[in-house]
Length: 146
Image 1 (tube, one colour):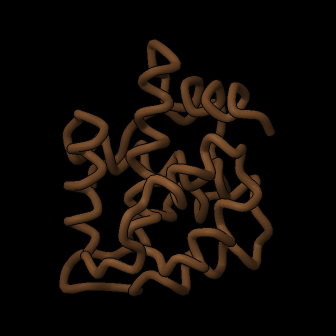
Image 2 (cartoon, rainbow, N blue to C red):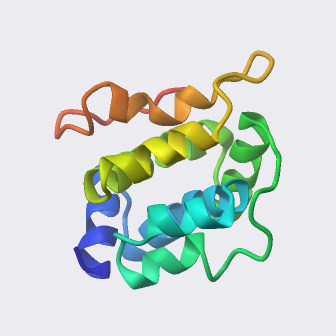
């Protein structure tokens, strides 16, 4: 998949008005995931993505392996994307679902294994809700609260 197709998929799936918003949604999610994951895991996950998208998880990250919870993840994504936390959570789920469709299952499982199953009342499993529901479908569109 090329950069234009990746961003087009994000734009379509999220119903965004333009490519800029799609790039910002992808960048916000993948940069923040890159910050949370150990460097090697981020590189493995990003390896199958378009080079411009891969960069968000690898080259744009100054410190991999940061320890933060689901709430902080949503705060960071929403700040980068300039949106509220609920929308950022839905966007992150859809971006992760597209990534899931492009990467080897072993690399995606490594992502899951790199994140805690639960922290306090927040559950990183929420990031995988679209994937676990069978993936994005054309009839999807209602955002879920984060």
